Image (cartoon, rainbow, N blue to C red):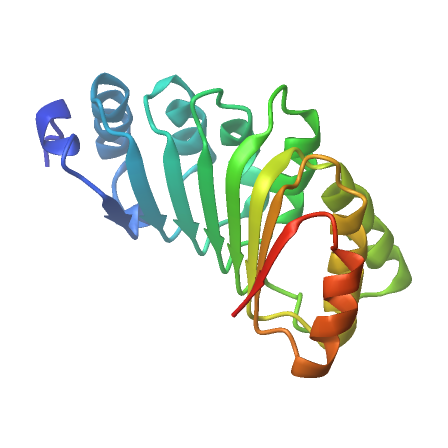
Length: 192
């Protein structure tokens, strides 16, 4: 299949592109780089080079489902990127990359992150707290797939983040909400 920049300008979802051949990837990457595409949803695995190719595009909003978080590190520092959605994708490498970003990412949404539904070890808690308290994000949403004790760790880390202005949490146990509200009393907080 030949990919054209004009066709890609109306593209919004690239689904399971892992089925493409190497030559098709090259065509796709070039077409995306030549397009005015500003929003893209990538579902399923793509080669690491694909995310590297996105660095020279006009994409401002990127939604990624079922991906390796480490492969997303190149896109984290894209200056034009303002919104990033992660679904069933490990957010820790992305959060770590956001600590190095020059300006704050406008919006990060995390849905059902892998392994957040089981209680973290002490070492894992330390890693999460470190990166989440320093990540340069203005608005963050964390939705579902988080264990009870991990909600506490996340709210503690966010309380120390000077960049965050708005937090949306979805799936928090009812009896934890008041404690989290007190913990995050300096930001705009919403529960769903």
